[in-house]
Image (cartoon, rainbow, N blue to C red; front, side, top):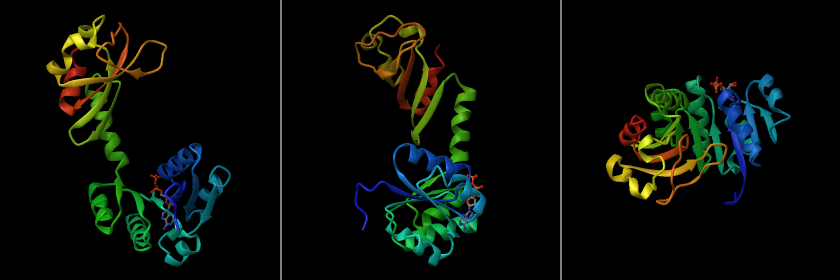
Length: 220
Ligand code: ADP
């Protein structure tokens, strides 16, 4: 059966989400079996994915034939067809696939997928919408909520810290955030320490409670 170092993933549904995910995995040297009921889509990705197959993921026999039960990881990337998504996910659960991810189009869909036994539910539209809200309303250059209430934010180094050792600025105590990385103009991101001295135009990544990260991005 599956080894822990096996780098194979079954991706069901090659729509926008599934195909992007599958291509990214291939780019990182994973072996991807891409499956879709649409011959047109399968044709489109036949060259770029390791293996592709036209099959119906709600057909248990079809799943067995492609060896779905042998995979350690599978992604159900069917979104809009709720019934298909839930059925495909529950078949994979029954087959004992140990790590199943599934895309949900709504919180309710996500809840059902979880109840069916899916291990990781992702809500791409919902999550991206929330994320963009933080960019639109604030001054952050980028933003990721790692989990409820805790975030990483990318922002310009505020005037208050320019030319000063981070350790001397007291910004952690004052704003509740930690500067984790810094990028000087034209250079790459590197980690920040208490000895880092930000310069004008530097971009920093800060970590902290969501509200604190937001508040800090506003002080410029
Ligand atoms: P996206 O928003 O990422 O494009 P969609 O929900 O539109 O996602 O696409 C999901 C893909 O899943 C479609 O290409 C569709 O053909 C495929 N699909 C839907 N039902 C099944 C099924 N039962 N078996 C295999 N593929 C399916």
